[in-house]
Length: 292
Ligand SMILES: O=C(O)CCC(=O)C(=O)O
Image 1 (cartoon, protein in one colour):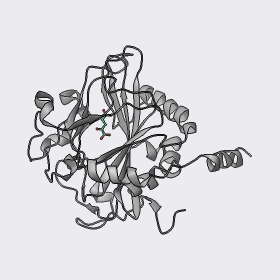
Image 2: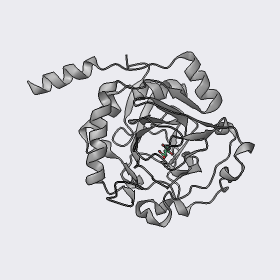
Image 3: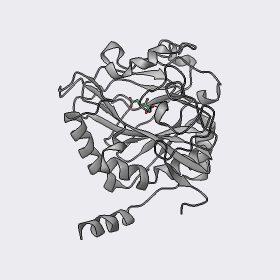
């Protein structure tokens, strides 16, 4: 009986489509704010998952000031593999369609989920970076959907972007977030590439854009856009966000040295350069030819 009820409730959840203007903004700017990106019924279950992870993190955690109720940066990843709420969110929230629409891709394959918490008075900034250099793929149709679960302003650690920088065709060296304290992130130090410019020191030289968001709003952005975030200066509002990462039609498998090791290439049924058709690791969640 309980199963039936859960399925019926899911069926009532609404899924968002992008407008033509939102798709155009993503292509032009590399980022678009999507109001009401997911059904509000997802918010509390996802906040509950975040609470659970703060107490019982996975091996992929990055926890600066573990256990503290303030000045704590906490990230965790790959919850979809073991957490039913996140697994359902990936499949049923409509994010896959949003990603495909933004990327103008027929299909959207899921890569991983990333829980990103900055408790009140967190000093740690998110350094300016591109996402693509961290990941074992080639292609332009790679995007993230960063959904906020709490109200957030730029001062409270919402994301900022260098508008249009996804079109620059530069591959920047990835930085280790959280520095030496991030024990599960040192792999990023192995790469070679161009150093990210010091955007903070010369913000006026860049077209920096930031967004204030309400719970359920999202930022959809290209893996090639430069982005970062300040610490959380709020004294009363934690910042809790869930980012999901999506792969489009042009993406191929490229497990180079120094990329995210959390998917072991030995276990993936792909050779270098192949389209990422491995549904165990990168499930196709949306396909315009099949999905409603
Ligand atoms: O939430 C943050 O501070 C960073 C998020 C980010 O860089 C991402 O989702 O790619």
